[in-house]
Image 1 (cartoon, rainbow, N blue to C red):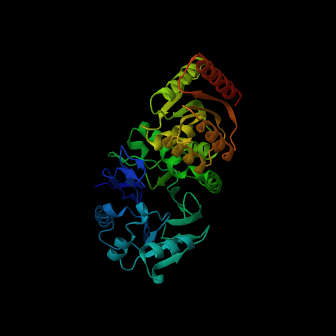
Image 2: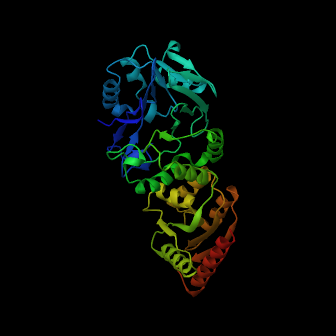
Length: 397
């Protein structure tokens, strides 16, 4: 059974999903994903924290029954309403007819909208409210737009446990262990970057507000709705979320390009070589027609430099590259050293449109080049100059 005691009378009862191919129908899940739920047993009352995705709810109900001796929990606390966590609500209500749903005003509205639940089933809580289970005190913190408007966090005062909703989460199923003390966490870090940038990235200012709100708490465990329960690595986890939500990057450059027949790709490769010659070590090059958007977004967020190149395609940006630029604009990316390059056969358009995206994102383009048909010595010189200007701008950051 996928059940673990986190502290006395606080248990993990989540489930793994190794079948779903794409999270939200968009983001690849090569290592699966976990849907995390928890039980808190007080001396007088028992509470569940969130549920699971509907396709995994049968195992979930079995886990809950096993840990409550088939006695119905008293409360279901809903920290986040996205259906991968709330999908099990109707089944929970059917199995435990007396259970009360604890949530804020927006949560209650969404539960009604998604699952058509009667008013009598709800207990509304506000920021700072508490719920006493008997020796286990739950305190609620509203953290809207991390990353839905109803999101909140629940803190167990006696144990220093923060149930954080999607915040501090990561892609990747749990392989035997549940807490970070039980596992090698190395591969989860790249998945955390991808999870944050793909899903939460737009909402950095709200993540900052949530970090400020919880900064004074003594936190011994962070129990997210995806990925490991954090204990030993809390400092690293919070630091990653803090840095990403401030749009702060690591040294390095991400190069995104599209190429129909290899000419634009040749320029991308030359820029990469020239950057390496100037001492840039972390260089990630993505062919937008092949790399999944998920990984391109993650690298673009992670590294300080961003270079985007596209051929002109029917007087527009090559579609896979434009999809990437739309993702950058949507996530309101900031604080990047940006350069662009384009190519065309008879009429140039892509370079100008890339610069239009830069203007909308309020990013300065430190250099650009435009190639007609194929590379010659003039283009190689321009690629060298572009790399020189990007490297110099990175050193100034």
